[in-house]
Amino acid sequence: MKGHCYLFLITFGLLSIDSIAEEAVENFNELRTERGPVSAMVRVEPNTVRIGDPVTLTIEVTAEPDVELLMPVFGSSLERFSILEFAPRESIDDLGRTRSTQNYRLQAPASGRHSIPPITIEFVDRRPGQRESPGDEDAYELLTERLEFTVESVVPEGAGDDLKPPLERLDPTDSKAVRPWSWMTILSVLTVITLLFVLIQRIQGQVEKKSAYEIALDRLNALEARPQPDSESMDGFFVELSDLVRRYLENRFALHAPELTTEEFLDVAAVSPDLTREHRSFLRTFLNSADHVKFARHIPAPTDVETALVAVRDFLNQTTDDEISNSDGANPGAAHA
Image (cartoon, rainbow, N blue to C red; front, top):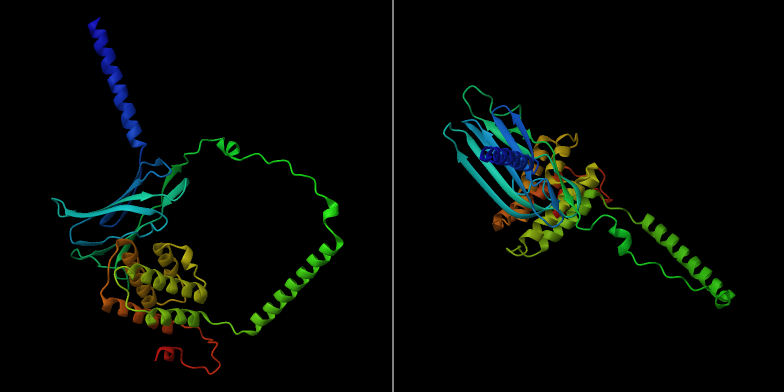
């Protein structure tokens, strides 16, 4: 009898362990990507949460010896989430391989299906006999796959109708209360509004529209006229400066930059025939530096702020529109002289 009891307990214990292991496996979503000497693992856990609960994002990259890793900057591709915590770490194992890890605690803004966009990881292959980077590029790129997870609502199904108050019955309208002269007044007001609208449209049509370059230059001049930003206003300064560049690119080259994350926009800019390799290199360096200020709370030196303003002005002058609204045809670069 005791033998049967022991057998039952052992069998029940094994089934419980299998059930716990299965639940643990299903409690996260993980994808792995590899390119040459570098492999990357991206994991989200848990893969299903309630609205308001955080999820943990882990980016773990392993590189062979003599391969230099360039991990993504803080918050890359994660602008749509609230970043609660960030913990980077790097180590060298017994085989000389570099292992870099970035751990985020994120919070989604709403319930439903969400995804971690592809994340770009760069590396330079310094192994003997290997090519350090492809072609004219500075480094190789490894792009991870999109990783999805679900945020459930706290409102139970079917509760939507119960939360809506019933419509009350409307009282009948007294037709005698609306006098004929009231209709005439309404028609007169509508006529005046229509005439004003037509007049405004004509005036606006006569006003010469500014080019994308002139709009961006006005914003840049206004930024330069402000006092030097301090630690409290540095974040807002770089938010406006990076928005200036993004809006200019949207108006000038029809790149829908404001709606994209930094990494997604750089992917679009990489295939734009209107931007040279030097322009794309400037955009990558500038936008990543601005993200570092906005998300990692980095405080640049005053000389770095001035360098950023000069770099943006040079970029505007190098990519300016062919047609400038100034009738005298003045050199656009002379606006700041």
